[in-house]
Length: 238
Picture (cartoon, rainbow, N blue to C red):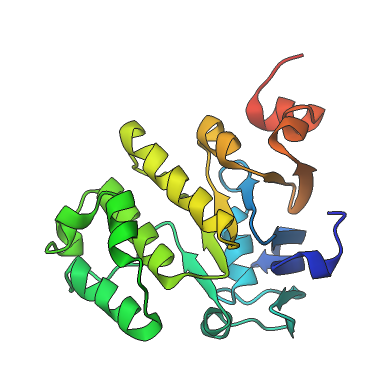
């Protein structure tokens, strides 16, 4: 990580977290830059979701700090970050199972207002899902609705865990296109996942999590040229 803190929209720095004396995060950092998409890669169990949750205050970190919109948090809380413009989409559980899709979108628009609701719904092909309850949606449909909610919120920073989970190949361009459009409007976007080809094509910057810490690898081309990342994560033999 070579940029100055002022260049980041969101920065979680030197986060440490142990469970029952076993360190999962030693000194891990996560950052987002305005107008760019940053992809966080790491093997299953490497601590990606733990890092995100600790950075957002959903887990209590043992150490580290978070900076967002000029504020420094030693004990961040998601609701405080959300008030400042951050939107978090977890890998599951964002939508209420007791409400119809349109009701949940209405809550977002009533709170934040938007003139682009129909545009986002059309872009993600979810207009026909408005009358359904969450339990009636497939996994991919639910994921597209969750992204629609994020886009309608118009956040300054979006952190989305596994955006391509259960998304059919035919719909991946819809998700990627909306994430790219949000970044083009100035939103700082962070995504995680294992869909290397799709996420590398989407990424402006790559962060690699390994051994309890993180490494900023630069652009996707620079990441692919990183010998250890290529060997240990991409599985490329040289």
